[in-house]
Image (cartoon, rainbow, N blue to C red):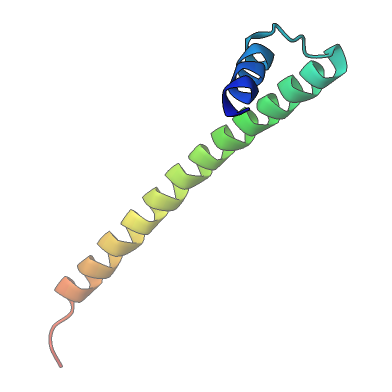
Length: 69
């Protein structure tokens, strides 16, 4: 029984199935949105890192320039 089940599953996976057009269009649209959002996030991450680095340098400069009390 187990061997017969495995053969049936293997045959099902080997069949060439076509994705309906509306499903394919929906997937393409979703992939496009994901790519667009990842680009925006990369740009935002770039600015956040740059801003954090600038604040750290400014804080170090202020600490180094102040004389001890």
